[in-house]
Image (cartoon, rainbow, N blue to C red; front, side, top):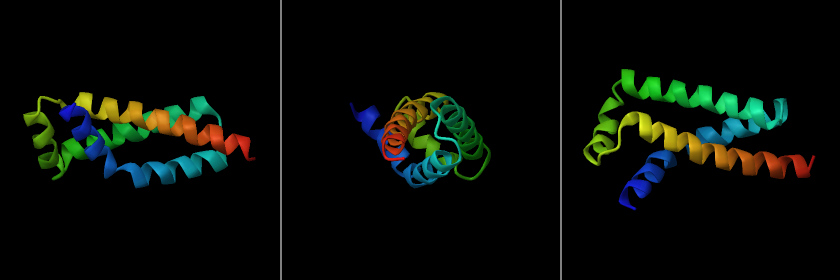
Length: 95
């Protein structure tokens, strides 16, 4: 349970960027498959950015909890996909 809360705490710092990406994706092409592929690309980019910059120190806390950076970003991607699916479904209903 603590690991899940730690992952959600990590995602909290990325949620504003995720929402901005959702809005841009919704206006350009509100289809599910391209949106998820874009989110996957953005997640891989964030993983690379965190691993190759000074932000790598933030990942040390999660490594001490027993969560590897790959698992951390994979679970962030899963949570982000769920939120994207909900957002795009609501967006399609009102357009």
